[in-house]
Amino acid sequence: MRLNSTSLALLFMSILFISPVATAQDRPKADQPPVPPASKTQVILLGTGNPAPNPDRSGPAVAVVVNNSTFIVDAGVGVVRRAEKAARDKGIPALRTSYLDKVFITHLHSDHTLGLADLILTPAVVGRNGSIAVYGPPGVASMTTHLLAAYEQDIRMRINGFEKGDPKAYRVNTHEIEPGIIYDDGRTKVTAIPVKHGSWKYAFGYRFDTPDRCVVISGDTARSQDLIDAAKGCDVLVHEVYSAQTLAQLFSSGSQRYHSTFHTSGVELGKIAAEVKPGILVLYHQLWGDPKSRSSPKSA
Ligand SMILES: [Zn+2]
Ligand SMILES: [Zn+2]
Image: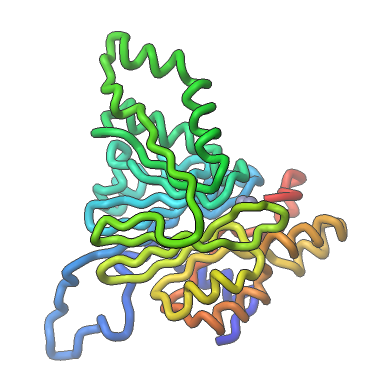
């Protein structure tokens, strides 16, 4: 499978919601009615942007919904509102704000975590039934502790003031992870995959094995053999990408070096896709270079 930058971009533009993921085996024969699947996995791109404040792209966040259970990967800016919009517009009740109770952070870059306070607090304000679980690399526990400290007055007022909020909804169970299986509820298994994101000591992609699908989300990464091995033959590969060609025109050689050690170019991704052979490849965290914006990110 050979993909150039143009075809990758077209592929992305044609795919925003994958619900459910279709494979050749799923297609009914002409004279047979479709058989509903016993389990239904949905992948929803809540945000496909990067640090640049592009008003048309929210920060990086992906939802994997397995029946009524929601797994959020990364908490970019806008994550809660984008989930609520998908719940309303696409009829996915598991994405209602009050049901957001699990998040898997790939790494601690701000574009992936600026929405974490939102994800902790807003569902609690509107009535989440219990705590939120936060999975992420070493350092994520310190981040959540400091976020809760930053909002201490707000939390105290909402619990003890007129709202009489549920204290349990404001609790955070944080899990600092290592490579391997980090979550298994008997239906969905989540595996953390170490990836190469420049000088970050800890950065992960995630593989979701559900009763009907295998979904792999790269997080931010340069070409990573561990990710390629873990993703081989998966149904859906959601992978980050940048345009080396555009960056060469717009940015300094230092910035180009940065991107080549922290991220994956469209040409490299084409080769990765040829190795992995996913059922479908979806692009996110796209860095095409935006000539309109002087604030296109030097780092992401
Ligand atoms: Zn990053
Ligand atoms: Zn990023």
